Image (cartoon, rainbow, N blue to C red; front, side, top):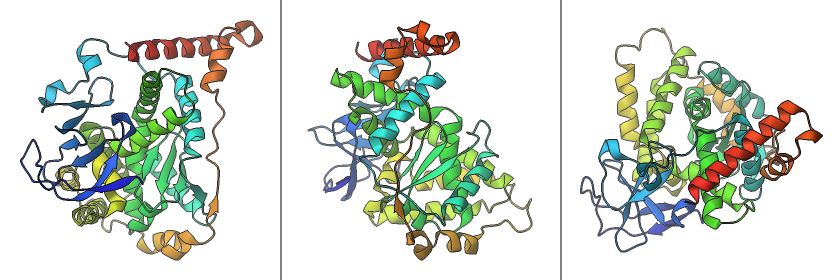
Length: 375
């Protein structure tokens, strides 16, 4: 089970004092399967499972999640390694990012059930492409891949593949909401955050196991990313960029707020399908307030902002989405695997010089990052 019913009635938020309520908690491989809970009032996250719950932070230097015994000032959100000066090398080189994505795709193929809808696929890819054109740095050819799951699940891969669950699509009500959700994930890919987090999470898991990855490390990295998100600042930035994309396409920006209000209601009634989204992102209330602040004085430029509700329902309505779903493999784009890259690096004479140099650089970066993580 991805979530578990855990009672935390006697505990309270260490930041605002709000009493926890019984809810569906999410587990994260990074923290040894400990359960995570987010305060619905202030958004603080804690990891339970020990005598003293620990607070979850995202390192502002390396971007990885970490645990702390007490609240940290906003300017001191750094993991132990970065705080001691062991800041990781700049990542990712595009070859490393591509190799990491290959590993993630291969690992997730046995963990999640990927499906395709021949009728809905062109529509999903078209909306993703239109939104990507309005977000600077976005991958040029984004592709939406469906996961057959009732849970709300999203994940951006470095190449622009956007993993979206069928449960999330059924939760949306119009095309404008879809554009916001896809735009949020495209923004993560455009900024390079998706590549950085997947590479570093995968390396950290490999170093923790002290052995070569058997695929589990990479699937854990993807699951961690889906369940822990990128931290408040990066998630807020992704919302802002998604909103700009909506405005550029003349969608009704209030659709994003309507989606978030329904999400807030689902979290309040402890709907297990939204547990991952609730833990990975800032509270819906916080997200709504920031979107409304960004919209203040701007709405009204378009006479009739569009939502395309009927078009959306015809393409992705319950019956339309369920009809003809077929199981697919999460095919990997052409890129070397970690093993192939490392084996090829010592043999530059067998391949072209530019390719040999690129692989050698990637191999050196791999060694540097693993060495840093194993200190």
